Image (cartoon, rainbow, N blue to C red; front, side, top):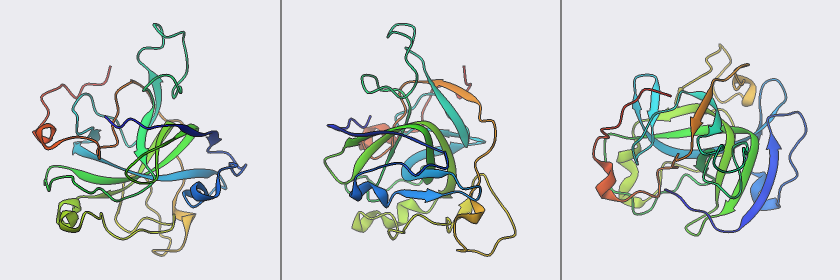
Length: 216
């Protein structure tokens, strides 16, 4: 799974207060239709029905969920994410994925992160995020078409997604701003500890997973 380096930010998103972030991270923020600041990020996963399965395998997660650490009883009862644990939803600040082999079974996800969010240095590019809550906003199944140059599409300023909307669909004009992004009110709580942003797996892990998709 992705392992970040030094912790560079620890903040709360999903409220009407703009997080105080270092300049290079501020471009990852966007505001929802109801005035809440969230983090715009990227990851890879396989879609199976209504669930998204990390490329490393394991149980899937729904389009919107709040993470709860599976190991919290053994690690002092902490909430996810915790700097000393691997819990929380993982995603990256950059949509680039150099070196990942082309494969038609995965989709590129654009996600909105909220709740407690941690940012770690990530050597290839940008930062690795770990978040309490994740909302899948866009699903792009054409990711394998862009592997030859190592770039997943064109970098966009956080704004309306331009692909299939995973959670929200309204009559608002396309590319009209974050008016179309509104977080669901009550996300389910998902016990998890080994999510992966997807960029960090090797080609040997890209075979179809055999793990059960039943959430426990």
